[in-house]
Image (cartoon, rainbow, N blue to C red; front, side):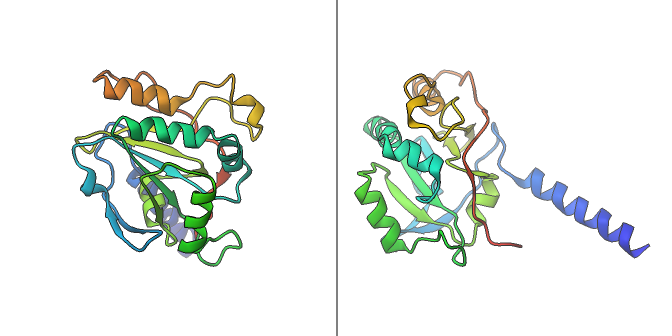
Length: 202
């Protein structure tokens, strides 16, 4: 009886974890983290503004696709110019070969000429797991009331080939355009794609 009971318990925990992940149309999970300069940043700091969350890992070929082509930076700049807060989040755990220290992450973002408002370190994975972030990149938009209004991919071309960007629909740009105009987001959830987020084992 022990093994079936254990299996049922694990299944229940997995189901609870899945239900706990952020859901479009519901309040976005609150969080607090430090940025690459050591400054504390809270989601609550930006109440009243739209916030984009971007999961990032410099070692991921899909991230390289969007940064190497400057597509991610252009999307960041356009959003920030409209008053949107853009938070890049790295949830790679400290024991992984792809982990970046705050200084390394800051240097990489600077070298990429990124326009994110801040880059946050989430090495314990608490923010990523709260949002159910699965890939790099994985994109989210939080509205001024604190509601999660978009979750998914940056676009509709799930490849690591920069040549595919030209013909892609940028879901984040489209969602922000609608949100900033006070319109309902026509595609509030899309399929994220990229490398797996390098979480520590639980």
